[in-house]
Image 1 (cartoon, rainbow, N blue to C red):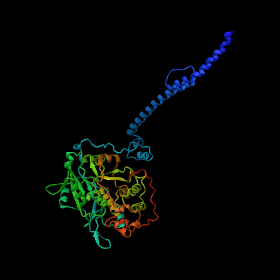
Image 2 (cartoon, helix red, strand yellow):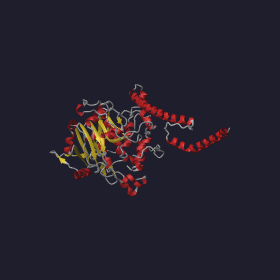
Image 3 (cartoon, rainbow, N blue to C red):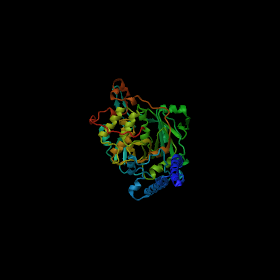
Image 4 (cartoon, rainbow, N blue to C red):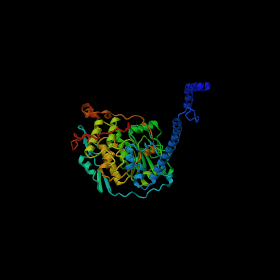
Length: 502
């Protein structure tokens, strides 16, 4: 009886001891989440949860790796698929990929990407003859002197003073056409006789230009012996830049008094046709076929660029491989000219009210913002490179493009897409990825920043009175000539700023 009476007390003591020791045991158990030690007091549900969580993490990791593998395999298969929608997702120039990009579903574009060029320039087969001219067969140019009076004197203008009616007629393509295309008599941009003779031998050329002393020539690299013999490397400069180059780099003269900086043959132009250096730079850039009429193929690069790919490989990749005759890079940030115009105003590339006026004229003439409905992947090019064969239609396109630059602002990226629109799909060109553009060159900074009073103008009223001197006297006439339509009611489309860059 005595032992039976004492037994409950023992049990009670053990329970109190359990309660006193419970917290230390729990602490040790929590510190070892993956410990397999089971304590007598552990809740079975807690044990199951710990084991299940470990299994869940392992299974989730395996499933995630399998999902990545499946996505990669699907991507590889879809790129090779005969199903048009699936293969279109891999075509970065296609509308499916562009639509995915606009929705933020496409991968972030690379700054540089590999260029699918051939391995050896010595093995490139150059096409025989010229690409036949199917639409425009005969193209000639208006070259008669065109005088403009500024109130005190008359002087000849390089680009002519074409009327609104002449401009409109030039967009109607015919087999035989005669158009304004710069180089009017006594208008300027004159080449030395020794250089005129030299460029007659140039069928293939890489051309560049430096104006107002903003750059020095950057030597091309990775150029094959074959390309050095085949191509002329021509650097067009004005008098200011020639002086600057002579002061900063070595210029040698050949027996014919031609001037050279490494591979580059300097081509000085006398009597600059415009007041604005940026507008002068558009002459060799867009009118390459006028400055060098014997050329069949040309690659234009801006003066700040250092070419790092053999030009023969460039022609094969962008023209001959897929039978293109004109190639230009897509702009990195903008597809609509109205986005580009907004960026130009933000970065003070030209007078803001004049850019607005330029865009109002285009919008009133039916130039809509870029969208997937259009037949082009973008309306805005990266204008620092132009690769082309000098066919009649390509030459006409560049003439019409230059006429817009001559008539309105010197921002040529605003006019390119407009001229494409006005030619109603008859002008075909290859607009390649921007990441390839950045793989063709090394971009160098200008030696100094361009600055002009006109770039700071915020209102048209600033051009009145003493500000009238900011008006260009030999270009941009369309900005000051009354337009046939009323533009007061024209409201430019709203721009969504997708990038800080301009």
